[in-house]
Image (cartoon, rainbow, N blue to C red; front, side):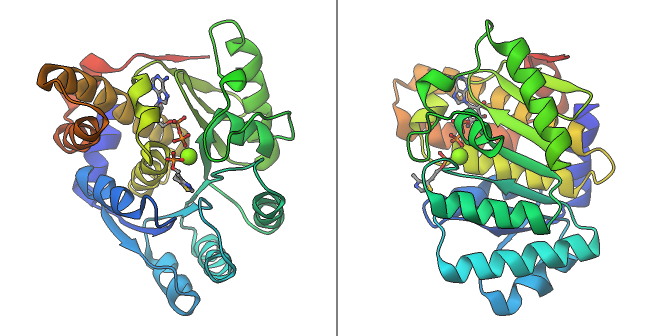
Length: 274
Ligand SMILES: Nc1ncnc2c1ncn2[C@@H]1O[C@H](COP(=O)(O)OP(=O)(O)O)[C@@H](O)[C@H]1O
Ligand SMILES: Cc1ncsc1CCOP(=O)(O)O
Ligand SMILES: [Mg+2]
């Protein structure tokens, strides 16, 4: 099924409108291209609605907010909701500041999101639980482990129900939850958290997968996570062979997403359903 979802991205090449942060915007545009979709990064409030309403999906990332981009985000999300375009929200740094939390509260009270994708500390904060977020990075104490997995799956299924959105949680163990069902993904490598933007890239990739698969949002979000995880495994191996560090890894990761095919994905992914 995930292979078909990937194939749909390549065949349909959806336009993905991203309003994201300047730290990782180039990586987000490139990962969208690498998977076969078509990115446009547009954050002027004057044009946000025009572009969002004709996109396959919209990616909203609160990594580096300012008054102007928040205004553009409101325009883009409202237009996307009106046009039936799925919106992926990355609540970067949720729990780190009142400004981020207030902005998220405004979004959740006014709009509908298809997927809310972030690291575990961010999604604990979104769910109103104690969070040890370290700025934009997950706090070690919040990690999903084999010991707390059952409890975390239940928490994020519940959060999915209360947000009315798929909740996609990243880390060593990824959880992609709807109210009834969760995919658990155990691919990837710790080096992924030593490169900035792997989470932002995963959110952009999730938007690309949703943009080509409007009728299967949970599976599209899980497939995006699986592709990123398998790409992480491949990149780690290549980096090791080259004796490289995080810079090499970053390039290998992008390569692996662009070269991903059905067979590699099928053979590499480590996914279960709960
Ligand atoms: N320790 C880890 N082991 C395996 N994969 C990881 C690990 N940490 C992060 N990842 C992967 O890196 C990507 C980004 O996740 P994460 O670092 O949690 O997001 P963010 O960058 O938003 O904090 C995801 O694909 C996730 O699966
Ligand atoms: C370092 C940093 N600071 C503000 S946004 C950002 C990038 C965060 O990217 P990611 O969530 O993918 O680690
Ligand atoms: Mg992030």
